Length: 315
Ligand SMILES: Cc1cc2nc3c(=O)[nH]c(=O)nc-3n(C[C@H](O)[C@H](O)[C@H](O)COP(=O)(O)OP(=O)(O)OC[C@H]3O[C@@H](n4cnc5c(N)ncnc54)[C@H](O)[C@@H]3O)c2cc1C
Image (cartoon, rainbow, N blue to C red; front, top):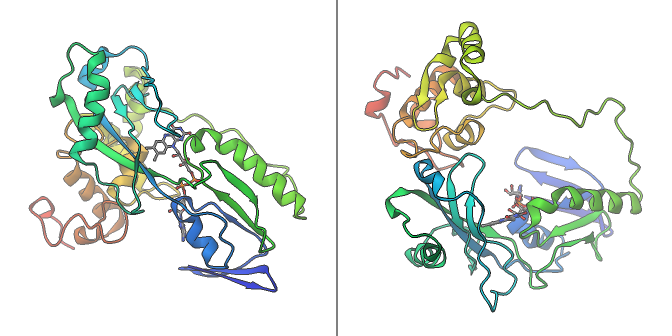
């Protein structure tokens, strides 16, 4: 929310959960890096968002593409690094993303023009591509600066303030290398870094229930019968997986977080069938009221009052 400095040095950060005293801040706030820098007059760039829209197809046409296809148009759109007809790891085909200047940092709408543009770009490659197999479309905003490159450096103005700005595409791919650069910067400005002797960099790969064989599935269902109940028919996700996500150490308590953990609602019906059941699970596991359950952020309440699907909700 705010930053306090004294004699051009970082002193503390004011957050919604209180004040944190610190000598160092790594400003990696994506679209909002310039606003964060403004808090202490340390701005050295301006973010101009570029929107990228994408359409996702149903898995029932996944056989239409065997390889990822990228189209290179000449002349290329300036500073545009990607785009294509892509098969995702889960088997959906994805077309896009586009690139469009978009000055509103909150606008992630997808216009008809963008969808038409995607179709014009990719449909010539395929003899037949059913439009009615589109199950959803999304857009995201790239956090571009006018130098169109990453800005990873200590501030010229405030000691202890590190810029990680302009992390547009391919920022995700570059993230591990960016982290190493930031570690180097911290060392250079005098932070004493010590390796944790017990740090384990390996994370055991979690077994995904739907990919197990019958014997393995039965073994799990015997221990927890909730794994024998399919809650999302399109993606074959079980009630057990949803409840585990709700009760995990970092609880998934809204629709989108449960969706990202488990894939519920990512199939053909886009949650039309499973959403009420997931809401019921959240109510049963947490005691939250139906009206308080969110799609994602504050204000995105799924219900404005009692709903038919929550008729058995006594709370
Ligand atoms: C359409 C599209 C396609 C892309 N394709 C690719 C690709 O193919 N390959 C690739 O490598 N990259 C791709 N990227 C880019 C990649 O997604 C970004 O580079 C990456 O996500 C940037 O990560 P980040 O951590 O810097 O910023 P972000 O992921 O934006 O994270 C910033 C975080 O800061 C938080 N924040 C901001 N302000 C505050 C505040 N005041 N207080 C608390 N928190 C705050 C935000 O909520 C957010 O969680 C794509 C991006 C888009 C939009």
